[in-house]
Amino acid sequence: MFNGTEQDIHIEDGLVEGFEPDEGSLAEVEGLLEDELLKRRALVVLVGDRVLGDDRTGTLMAELLDEEGFGVDAIVTAAPDVDSVRKTLETAVVGGADLVITVGGVSVAPRDQVPEATGEVMDMRVTGLEEAVRSSGLAVGSFEAGLSRGMAGVSGQTVIVNLADSRSAIRDGMATVLPMVKHLCDDLGRWSVQ
Image (cartoon, rainbow, N blue to C red):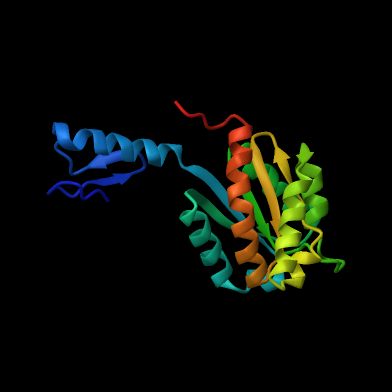
């Protein structure tokens, strides 16, 4: 909602409602529309029984992404097997997501197959991002993050990151990942300063 004037302006799906343009407010509305259209798009994939039973995980992910300027297209669930996760990641890449973050399925248990599925989808790994997530996780005492087999990389124009499913691994992982992901998106040439 835009409240820069006495009018209440609503912007939804790129349409402006309740707006009578004048010189003072037109530029502001154009800026708001541009910001909305340029917002990077993210998809969250919750994997595994522990994460799927906790609605708070999806809410937390959406809040953290929104704070960093990412629009969350969806929060989806995937069974903890290679085929389900791979298909979900491929759908997100084809759908044009800028960022896909998986939560869960990155430990050493036999059912934790997210890194294998991610490896099948990625064009290139970004090992510096993987190392940063593990290192920062250990620094805050999150053994789940520090011992994670999670991968990070790029598929087409989409950045994919695997995070462990503990609250501390998610919070710290997102704080570490998002500034780096923005830089990766810029490097991919999807966003340019004009």
